[in-house]
Length: 432
Ligand SMILES: *[C@@H]1O[C@H](CO)[C@@H](O)[C@H](O)[C@H]1NC(C)=O
Ligand SMILES: *[C@@H]1O[C@H](CO)[C@@H](O)[C@H](O)[C@H]1NC(C)=O
Ligand SMILES: *[C@@H]1O[C@H](CO)[C@@H](O)[C@H](O)[C@H]1NC(C)=O
Ligand SMILES: *[C@@H]1O[C@H](CO)[C@@H](O)[C@H](O)[C@H]1NC(C)=O
Ligand SMILES: *[C@@H]1O[C@H](CO)[C@@H](O)[C@H](O)[C@H]1NC(C)=O
Ligand SMILES: *[C@@H]1O[C@H](CO)[C@@H](O)[C@H](O)[C@H]1NC(C)=O
Image 1 (cartoon, rainbow, N blue to C red):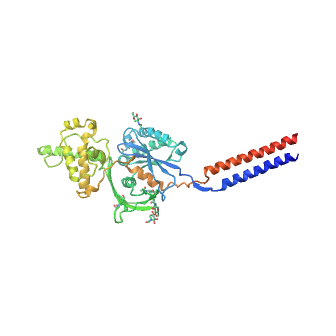
Image 2 (cartoon, protein in one colour):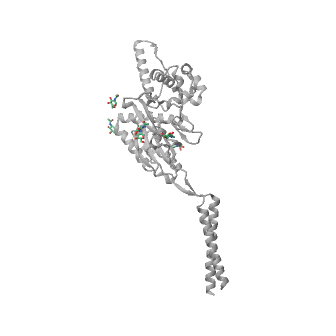
Image 3 (cartoon, rainbow, N blue to C red):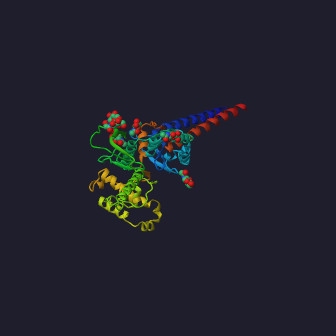
């Protein structure tokens, strides 16, 4: 009897000791730890005049002074032409977006899709369609909205961006990608870059051109001024958009002008184009190409050559024999006939329109992508909107070193085992 009671008492004592050790091990050296921030996603459709593209963006849920560090995860180009070209077949516009939406759904984790803000921004093509027939523009938007609503995303609406919005979001994109708004420092954190000036942005789209920069002075005219608060800094910008001076529209006008001039010349009995004007004898068809970039990169003019070099290169190209050109660049045949006139148009726009000269020309950088990210208005749009999307508080947990944690678990197991043995022995001896 005596020894049985002693065994039980011993086992119970061991149980207590093991429990206390486990308690001490689990309480000692505990640290407060923040779980790494979750990732947020956003979708932006860029419904341009010549084509539509879907961009998938992500940013860590904790932000820097209220603005997210946004990066592009994926881009998807919608097959076919811009949504404004579906004016007579609005349902087609909606259907055209579906393959890209389906692709985005494979990228965004299923549990995040319902809270993924999704926007569609249309630019000059839809602006023109709205001017021509607003009913048709509304029908296209209704179909597009219907198509996007079929996917489990938080659709926040389709809208026509003003030229000024397009320009100023493009300005954000360029400056963000070139690290002038925020920079990852050697100290391993995000900082506002010191001694760095923000850059101006010039943008040539399918049907409009935009210029945006931060002027030294305050702008009185509310129509051309825009204010952004990004990463805790205020930016007051000047922005202006010229509708119809984009390439496609410019080419249409140019063709019309040439046509008139040709007729005039014929009427006056002069040989075609003897008035000193530029004459293009090839037929020009406005078609899908975008931006300063494609033409200038084809002509090898994107690495800050001097204005005189650019001028000479463009004219040299324009004077080349057409059949020789086709022989030399068979793979570029489709766009070859546009490079001369687009090159001249860009030169004219920058020199006569925006008044760049030999001196200021060196300040122009031509670019289309920075890293893996497309330069356009969409990234800037998403970035500005992250200001509005609430910050997620980081989850705070109690953290323990793995060895201490393993020790505590072992002692808990031991305590349970000795306790159970004590109970079993007690019952066993009692039943005897
Ligand atoms: C575009 O069309 C091609 C050929 O028709 C098809 O292979 C491709 O998957 C389509 N892409 C998208 C994004 O719809
Ligand atoms: C605009 O489009 C609608 C629908 O296609 C058509 O009924 C209407 O006549 C058009 N209006 C104009 C001014 O062209
Ligand atoms: C956030 O704001 C503070 C105070 O204005 C500033 O010192 C810091 O550089 C800002 N952080 C970033 C990432 O811009
Ligand atoms: C600003 O825009 C409005 C409406 O478009 C126009 O009536 C006004 O004249 C413009 N103001 C200036 C200073 O251009
Ligand atoms: C920045 O702009 C906000 C309003 O958008 C204003 O409340 C704030 O005072 C401004 N900060 C600075 C430093 O100008
Ligand atoms: C930028 O985002 C803010 C919300 O954070 C919004 O109020 C503002 O209108 C946006 N700016 C533009 C130009 O759309």
